Length: 384
Image (cartoon, rainbow, N blue to C red; front, side, top):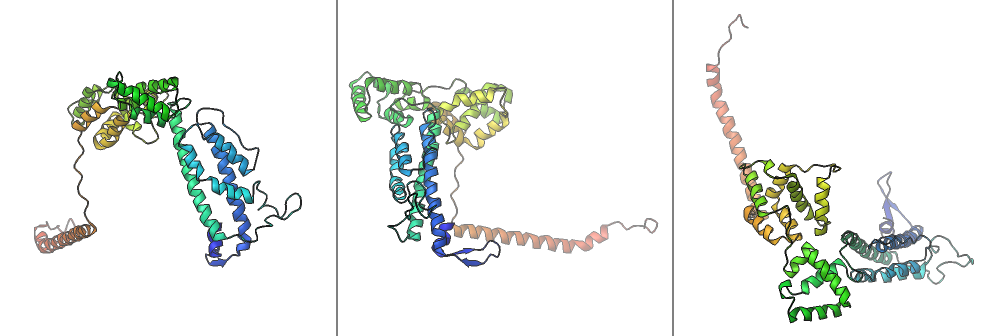
């Protein structure tokens, strides 16, 4: 808001609603101070979040205001995930620029430093328009980094990683391995050697990744191994189909199966991973669960929002069940979207039809009014 007022040299007075003049010299220091403080708070917050991603103790960087020192601390925690350094690298030039002008947060707070030397002695002019452009770029990159850490927080919560590999790395390895049925061939040996070189892994590191792939429903499907769900079968899907068609009652399905179906629907959401399935199901079955898995609602979700349930099955690596579900509950054909001109014609046609119906109704009422008078019983004088 301050930048917008500084660039236009005006603002709207909140009391009168009128445009008022503002001097740039009155705003430039508050703007620079707030922008610089934004960087400091951003770095401190992300140091705490990134340092705790793998369950380690959260690093508290409240003891310093130095931007250069804070940036160095953050960089210490970026190396364990390949996705973090590129997202942080685009921020470095902006942090460095502010660090050069105001490393400790005093330049735009006081007129002089502790040695009584005036701040900004080498900088007599600050281009407010350029500052606005650069700060908007900075906030865009900072928001991207923050969103990435949000996602990684959920991903690392699943505990699917090793000392050298993130869940995304292990997923990449699974996608580059041949099907498990061919692991006794030279094809697997070649892929193993290439992947160990690419990710700088020892034999032990690679074995740990393979062990995770084998037991993870989503990752194991990439090597051709489908780990079935215990409570959800094709027979259960057929039973749900019969319930939706009023051919069976809800008690044909057990409480545990209803909770399993509800968990599959929730797994489809972006902030959940296949590792959350068992936990969700246990939560729904728990006596401490505040909510209630209502069977009619589950049936409605499967029938009317089948794409969500199918997405959950896909995330859980249930190819067979997904195919059977789509066979039992096919998606209705998508109607082609009308153009704006066609929509307008349809609207006008409906309007004309409605007006015509109203005119007919009024005409019939006008014609029938005398007849209604003739056939209506007259009241006697005594009753009057």
